[in-house]
Length: 195
Image (tube, rainbow, N blue to C red; front, side, top):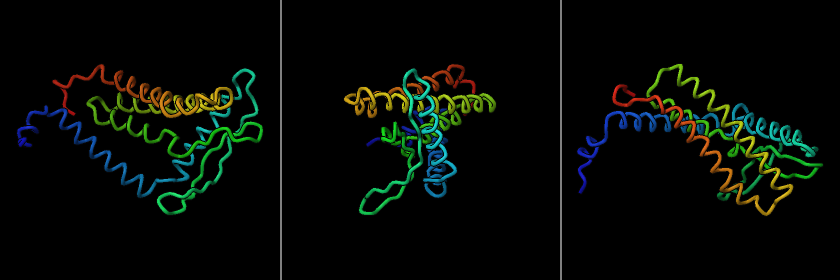
């Protein structure tokens, strides 16, 4: 049987501190989000509406593509035996729905994950603030580009939509997040700093 105390001592202190902070931040975020912010018009709805509005503006500005409009709509579905009412952002093209953007697709969870990693890593306060702000802006832009790509595919290459939605664009978003983490970690020296 593995001795947990010796295993704990084998993990370097900076890594134990990082994992402890990450776990604490995760628990605090989930309590705040599920308890107070879930499906909030101030956070989820505002971000989903923003992604829908900007996606339709970007797709309308691309060459010959026009007539796209984002609308906020209420929707209902059955989930685990109960009816759930949610608001979504729907992208219309000439009065025909081409894409639904739900609150779970607005990029909020990924932004929190990205920011949480930065907060848990050692660095100066202002460096963390710069990377968090810049990273959230970049992730928002990537998410809008993802939605624009999905709209384009549903309009012209529908056969590739499911693959792009479930795999290609998710890989793009997570790769962008990983690259930003790598840039942030370039100047961190775990031997000389504490977390």
